Length: 141
Image (cartoon, rainbow, N blue to C red; front, side, top):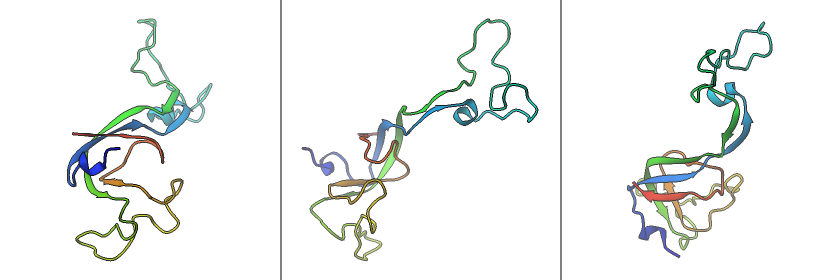
């Protein structure tokens, strides 16, 4: 087992690689943000009005279509590491040099759908791809 501080340091930039939250099969309005058609439109409102010309006699890949949304492999680049926490510091490990009040990294009652943080952790700037408890890969930028 490799400790996290052997690979990364504070204020370093990393990439986060993972699989996004799955949303299932969705239509073009939700999936691509296509404008809804007027109220009196025949055969549906939440569609693409024209999916292409007569010729070429096929649908271009650039036309918005319904299908799977989410559960895609994505890489988020250049995330700054704010803090690397150790598990051996059982309590009061959320103190910083600016805020010296004694507090824990886990909020009261634990994180929703996760629980209490018991192992080493890494705090990064911005969002992280995927759901709670989903495995992500961290690499140096």
